[in-house]
Image (cartoon, rainbow, N blue to C red; front, side, top):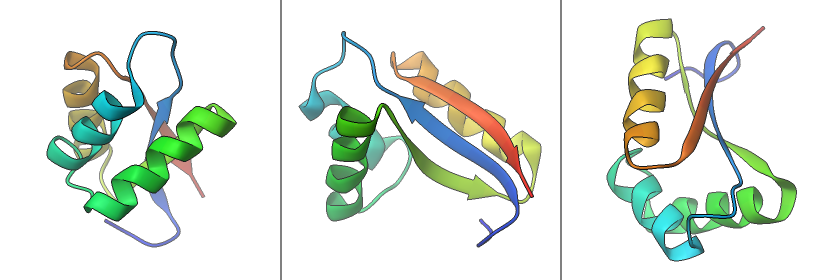
Length: 81
């Protein structure tokens, strides 16, 4: 992962997944720590979206987004400058 540039994986809020489910998936699929997963879930819930990770390579970002999508989360890849 990189600090400022690269490809961002963003999760969007939905009306289907519970906060517990989102936190669990952020921990076990995206590899976030328990605290980071909880914070990210709250941001998704309150603001409608949150960045989960950044990658230097598009393929890595797409891989995480697809994994999140396979578990029912709305994961997107956005380029950042």
